[in-house]
Amino acid sequence: MAKARREVSEKMKYVDIIFELVDARLPLSSRNPMLDQIIQQKPRLILLNKADLADDQQTKQWQAYFRKQGYEALAITAQENKGMKKLLPAAKEVLKEKRARDAARGIKPRAIRAMVLGIPNVGKSTLLNRLAGKKMAQTGNKPGVTKGQQWLRLGSELELLDTPGILWPKFEDEEIGKKLALTGAIKDQLVHLDDLAIYGLDFFARYYPGRIAGRYHLIQEVEQKPVPELLLAITAKRGYKEDYERGSEVVVFDIRQGKLGQYTLDRCEEMGQEKDE
Image (cartoon, rainbow, N blue to C red; front, top):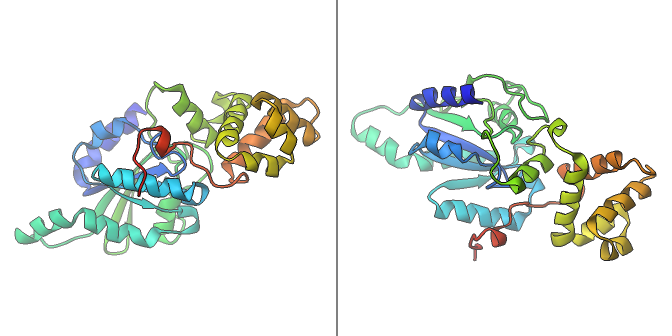
C-alpha cells in the first residue's frame, strides 16, 4: 500500500482530474481518508458505483451531500453500464474553468487525463472495461486484482490511468471495518464470517426487517429472537444442522449479492448529513 501511495503521488502531476470510485452502499466508509492528503486541490469527480445494490433514496441524499462539499457526484453501475454516458460530460463540467483558462492562453484542447482511485473491490477494473468497450483491465470479484498501473486511451476525449486499490493502514473505527468486510472490500480470510453475518442481520433487522423474514421464511423468529439466535434459526432452516459457519456464509453472500434487496450501510440520517429535500 505504501508503494501504491508513492506511485499515485508521483503520477498526480500528469492528470487533470481524479475519478474517485466509492461503493454506493457505503459512500463514506469506502473512501480512503488519506486520499485528501494525496489529491489535495486536484479536481475530483466522485462515482458512486454499484448503485443497483444501494438504497436509491440514500444514494440521492449522498449525492446531494457530496455536491454541498464542492464535488460533483454520479451514481453508476459499471457492471451493467448504467450511468456511464454521464461520466465524460460530468468530467468536462468539473474542468470547465480550467479548460477555459487554457483556451484563453492559446492552449489547444486535448484528451482529458484522469486517474481512477478507490479502495479494493469497488469496481475500478469493471469501470475501465465498460468505458473502453472491451476487456482491457483484469477484473475479479475480490480485492487486490489490479497489481500495477496502466494508461488506457478511450477514444479522442479521455485517457485513464488505473491504479491498485489503496486501503489505509489501520481502521480507527471498527464499524467501518465491518462495513467494508460485509461488502467484500476486505478478504474473508481476515474476518470471522459469523461476526459479519450477525452484524448484517442486525442492520437489516433495524432498517429492513421484512426482508429477513421474506428471504429466510422466519417471520415469527425475526419478531421474537435476538439477532444471534436468528443466525442459528437460518442455519437450521437451511438444513445445515449446527454448521453455523456455513449458515454465516450464506447470510453474508446473500447480503453482498443483493438477495435481501437494495441497502445502504452508511445512513445519512445517522451520520449528521442533511437529507435532500
